[in-house]
Length: 486
Image: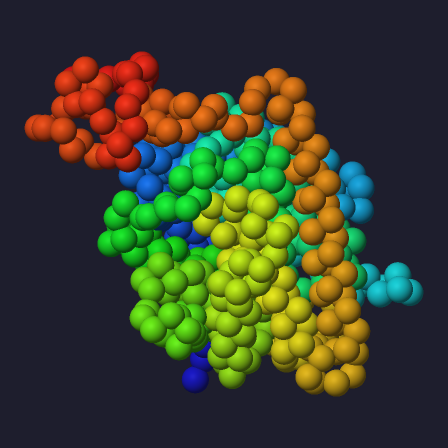
């Protein structure tokens, strides 16, 4: 029997918009993956942040996420994409440039610095060149950059000057995120050395956790009363945001092979295995030590599982995903619930949502465990360095664990230094933290808007009529927002 004909709908060359190199399935999956990751941020983290904080900070917290997403999109296509995935400027940085013209965006996607060579000079692995246009690649990588800034924001909720945040986002994207992305993904020195970061355990989670913790130190803490009691204003909406985050992770990890292939399927399955295991582990520890399961704790455990599997999602077997879930549900739980309360350093820094524990600790843990459990056959499906393997598989696997540690230390060190410099520079122009009298008020002081109309039939709060806020503080009406309620 001969080869059956390819249906016209799947053939190339059927129109000017379908070049010979285009794979419609890969392009569709990559755009869906990008959309899923975008939904993790907008509305996912917008909802989660707006509901997991105290009522008076609902609008500000949600807006920090929304603003970051929009700002990153414009900075990304204007200069940051090529700094992350373009031609090499330095071993850890690409050359800045726009990704806006159709001559660039309609061509086949390429990551020019990803060709891997042997020490003798021969080609080991060809340059990454997916079967879809550069426009798809630019957007897919953009939503990863955006969610990194939004995750970082979780450390700063409830007190950062919104105008300082508006300056912080493009600066941190430019001088921190692009360095990690190029070094580990775009063809930088860690990429060619063989450090494994399948989908962002280091580039996204470790960097946002360390960056957020460092920025939280320089911004300063919330009011004492807010640190002592900061209840979620809507636990059910928190679960809705968390659900979008979990389901969106199919695009987060499933899209990183840059194709709709068998490794993508493995990554999606491992992601859900690890997240579920971690959630159950965290909840079990809450029950054992605190006698009742915590809904917020379950969300934290879900997140640490998703973070931990991310650097190895398509590189480890299913049993390893369960082991990683057990550890991601227990190690960050220990650092957050036990170690944090005993450490003067951790208590000194007001990390609002515990991003250090859920992303930095879980991300570094996942990176090291990837170096331990990465399966050789799966590594060959994805990694540019041939014969890569985890420590449990012998051979050069022991060296891989060391590479993972060094890669993590580079991301930690860079973010500590660069985030500090960025905060100090912004501080010269504008205060990083809102004044205490405005922190007492919250959203109304920052935006002239409030998350919930609780004073009548949709009317805004008026100090002359209503007197006290829900937290029993007296204050005058300061100003109204730019957008008025009519």
